[in-house]
Length: 262
DNA sequence: CGTCCACGTCTAC
DNA sequence: TAGACCTGGACGG
Image (cartoon, rainbow, N blue to C red; front, side, top):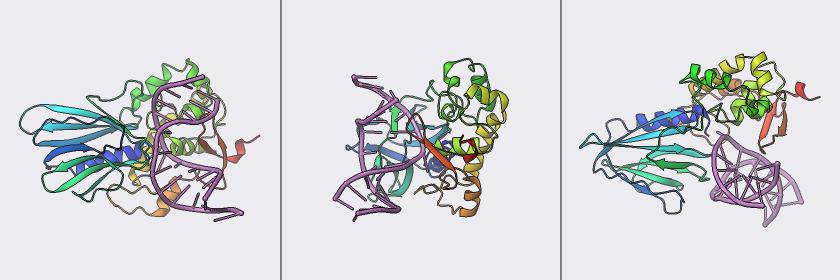
């Protein structure tokens, strides 16, 4: 269930479950079209960091200063799961074997997630609005003249070049909280309603605090039970049958306040 | 059984 | 701006 908050929770999960752990091998499920990972270390450690909708994992050799980075995206269904070796989930596509007889798996039912060895953050994505808020604002403001901002704000918010980490539920929740017509241009909306910038930081942080989305079968990486109540107080627009919805120009369902229908 | 839908990108006419 | 890439859950007949 991956937008900014879920990516952050996923990297937390990797870190919490990898602290002080020795990894010994990496294997790719041959069914997956992605490239094999080549981690030529006998014993290594793993850590992860998220920005927007990307995670960078770092593999550190225990016997030297060498390290390797791998950039991963989650697609629609990617997540990590720690199990005993031999009991990995059905759709485990990368398996990170550990000395203690357990495996950390990258699990991705739909296989839209991707990885690339030797890469860190993509340069075609903007700054993370929660980690680098000032850069996030600067990046948008200094490019507001561009054609991307001619598009309606509800579409522009999905553009990872400017709004890294915002996805389909966050755009709905952000716009629902602003008194702005979601069909006016992004340039006009951002100029007249600069609180949109703030919400691009605050709402992902709030979703993170709540333990991530509960839209479908998203399992909180810590197994923490989220009170359905607090989550439903957060998710007030997306998927709510009393809201209006339409299919946007990219084929995604956009949920919004029906007061904006002519 | 079938059709529709899903928290996201990608690339090919 | 369609489709392609994927699996599976919900729901209809």
